[in-house]
Image (tube, rainbow over all chains, first blue to last red; front, side):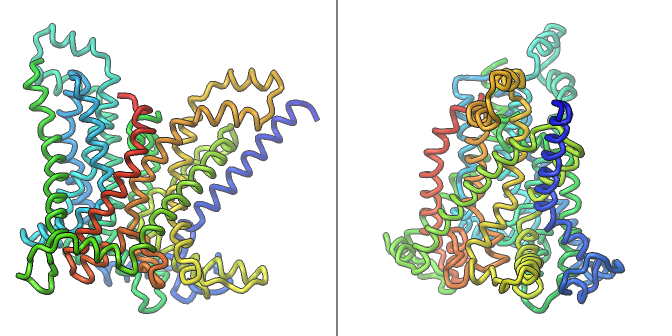
Length: 276
Length: 286
């Protein structure tokens, strides 16, 4: 075998291996997806049916039985709402820490990171009672507030690590031309950071969309986002795998597709800029 | 710019996070020292350490602590070891790399409740599940995963979710590895194992530290997967701290004991975080 052939064989083996691993890991999602187009009988057939006549009945039933649109709207409102608020609060903070770092900047950043270490279950009881006393149980307001605070450290970190890499000379030039701090931010920093801000927003939306601890504990029906709606399918009142799959597919599809586009930023954001 | 303005810009973030940290936590501390059951309002007298005693002597306490740690360690080992090996193996050009990446990362975006339901029903069901069908085809008795290996099943679900994250981080990190160094080593006759051991692993030290830190934050708080799949059972076999506290607070309405448990969870997280932040903190570039 020549060296070239050897190299080709190696590529082939690597490729086959990588595809096998990827297909095995992806299989449960694939299975959920195709089960959503089966009848309930096909869904539990042994051996598992791979070829069948697809039906979209399940999706209609899911909408009728658990009002998918209502819960999807809750997910959209809570994840987009809290992301927008977090950005509004975090942009000025990240800007001032990146461009005017003080002695304590590093401490403040690490402290923010440490608030993520506080387990949610440690404050479950007081948050539950506060929500109950202020009539915020099963309300979207409560979820928006909690999601905002939950993701604020990550949003600040991501924006900070991006702003830090912006060339300082541009700001100095703007200042020479008589720009006020407000002009600096609105006319120089923000236009340069559209990409960074949108990837931060994407990550925050993904995390809110999939958040399950608070949404399971604080909502019942009115404000329940998709994570909580899906949990209601866990009751063992019979085998409804096709409908369960249809509901799950609808709940996950938007965010999985979202995620495919922001995987690179996700790494940067979730590792607090330590891995680029 | 003036110091006062920079402070003003930071103030909203800092104050909100401070409030988010201080108020609920001090309420938890206060509740943990009083008798407080939502079913019997108005008898909130001071009881000292009694709630802590109740929580620690609860039959679920020792299983919950050990399950929490077993879950954390198993998932960390599975995801980091498999993640490093897999990412080193697929870090070469091959056909359809882009699609493989997309397929690999997908489980990370599946919400925890869906994750648990797919595995509980379609994969692990002892009669109709894929695993049952595979073992039957191979001539074995199907296993009832959720009741025979409840904690193992949860570990499997959670690993499935976090392995893609580890792979993605490591693959991203490997792309910045010096290829010339690798080629030079190859020229000098280094085997694939040597390159992996002496070039790849040291290069991945920092990403590994970061993955461990991030996963720890999330893994100590695993809740939805247990809530949906096993409900903590059978017995306490798959109950972790988060689930035990939830059980005390929202199923038995005992706010006092649940608060004591919450403080214990905070303490445990801080012990873990203390070591982690020290190990990882110096790796974060500020």
